[in-house]
Image 1 (cartoon, rainbow, N blue to C red):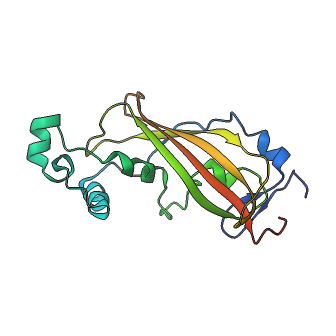
Image 2: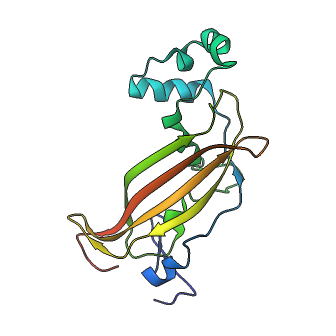
Length: 181
């Protein structure tokens, strides 16, 4: 494969070699605004899916008294990195560097997510994010197929560009059935 023009599959993953991918370790994106503010409906929907009855997510008056404002569930924060799939101006960013990094394999499965919260996130906040490529494993052979574990770290920033949380994510990017990409 010619590294000057990587193949992008129909699911959006850039296909390339492990050696090309390793050059991405340490790469960090510029901060970009999250497409939408943290809002009540997203917070309540997430809490409902998790069956989390914490009043900080459900009772705005109670949360204002206890925390100054209603809170977002920390587990929901990773969803903020997902850009809207379509906008009227047509712009759309890839949701994670793990899709853009040139690697064999077109299929992704999430393996692990860890969130370190520095302070609570409130309804109505507008955040921005930047992402860093932390590591890419050598090729592994699993029941799913041959692939690489890709570790990224997402930094969420508030309007004053102060860190709110870091989210470290590991996914397995592979070619289904063990075929070569």
